Length: 76
Length: 191
Image (cartoon, rainbow over all chains, first blue to last red; front, top):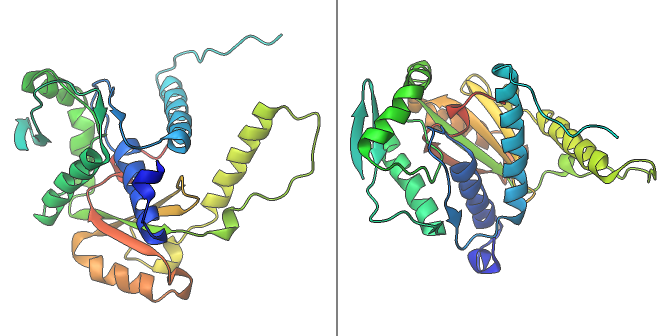
């Protein structure tokens, strides 16, 4: 998150805010629409990485369930 | 915010004048507040992921209809339950052990190994047994701020018992309890 977002917050407020952003953006039912909104005043450098990992894991799990081939880069 | 029904489910939606490209932290807070308000009214609610936009109510109903059975089954299974979040700012057990330098390990492999190690250490942090039967299910994850968040599924009427169980554990003296919340971590299968 940006310094602005966290400025003046104590340790408790920081972790509560971090948890809020984490669960609202990364938890819950995905109904099917594309999620295209970016968050304007939150620097998601760390969170993006976590979301990316989560998304890759979710994709692999869905591919496994649906018996779709998982594409991987050919070994040299 | 208004209610749109779709078979046996009801969805909370709001109408936007135009498709936004960016959202603010206030929007994230508003999403959470809307969910909390229904929980406070006694409803069992599953959170939906922030930022899902549909062209019309009918399009939303169509998408919800395709996944509705699974969502309805989940709400039936967890009827009367809420989610509590227990946040710990400093968990020394998650600190990375100092590994000897290995020149043959590629950066990608080393990164994945670190992730695997962190996940294993997270799984070792279970509070389920210590808090007793008030906790019906537990999930744990690391936060970006190096803290840890436990998600606990409890019965709606047992919030006071849950808070008492947390207060009784000296190791959780600095823990922050948030809730009761809609089902966030338990809204999807554990993956």
